[in-house]
Amino acid sequence: MSEAAAVLHPGHAVVEPAESPLTPESWGKLGMWVFLAGDAMSFGGLLAAYGAMRYASPNWPNPSHVLGIQLTGFMTFLLICSSVTMVKGLAAIQDGDRAGLKRFLAFTVLGGVLFLTMQAYEWTKLIREGLGLTANPWGASQFGTLFFMLTGFHGCHVFGGVVYLSCVLMKGARGGYSPTNYNGVETAGLYWHFVDLVWILVFTFVYLL
Amino acid sequence: MADTVATATRHGHHRPNYMAIFWWLLGLTIAELIAASIPVGRAYPQMAKGILLVGMALSKAMLVAMYFMHLRFEKRTLGMIALTPLLICVFLLFMLMPDLLWLWREI
Image 1: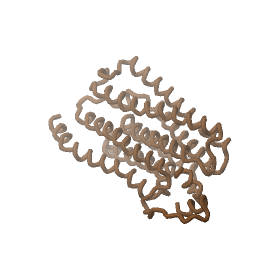
Image 2: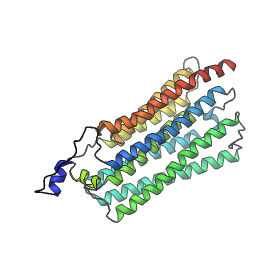
Image 3: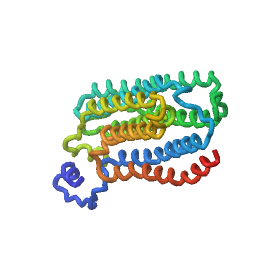
Image 4: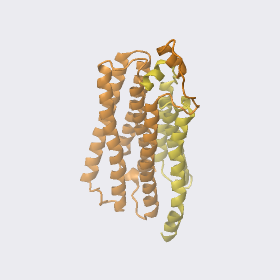
């Protein structure tokens, strides 16, 4: 930071506070990580509740028999691809490729929208089969409650991420980012990768186990 | 303002091979689907299936956190912040164990 200040203000003596190895390069990134840590606790609590309810229930349905594993497997693949396009978009703007940033961000947003569409289809199908917040035709009613709470909470995060990334995309389209100013893209990317990471865990614990 | 200054003086970017990470994630996802579809039996107990699936899920999560979220190349602060909820969740599981064991006995 001292070096940067000297570049911006040559000839002026700059007194900088002592930096520790713990000082982040970006306060925005630090703020996002703190938020994600709290959000991880929310999902951790829900997953722990799911695990506790499942193993305490004598008639918990086998998820692979009642849920569409193939569809959700493809949804997982979609989110992984969108994480790749997100990180490619960040790499593009770091290299000064504004067109690349726009292209990859657009693909990331598209991935999120497709994921939400497929989730809506899955929910509609399950609700028509009788699964609800307090109803489960295949066994313990808590299955329906926890399934919709977990996937719904995650879906809200995906929706928020789609809106967030759309705003970043619009700013990028107006030339708001550059190789020396891309923290906004990086911060948004952290949120999106977190959403992907959580889905990896939700997919395993709810659909596969 | 501080963020702009920080990015203006950054020299070089840590750039892992994102496509390699993608192929690992895809491979692990396919392996998970295969592991989940194999019928449970004496040769393939439920416990083994659980350990395999959880192990693969955690590996995928680590890959995303370390390389896509760049935790591997960040300062210690962010690593400590990221690790904290993991430790608290493990603590939460241990706190739930007595209730779960009691309920299993009841069943």
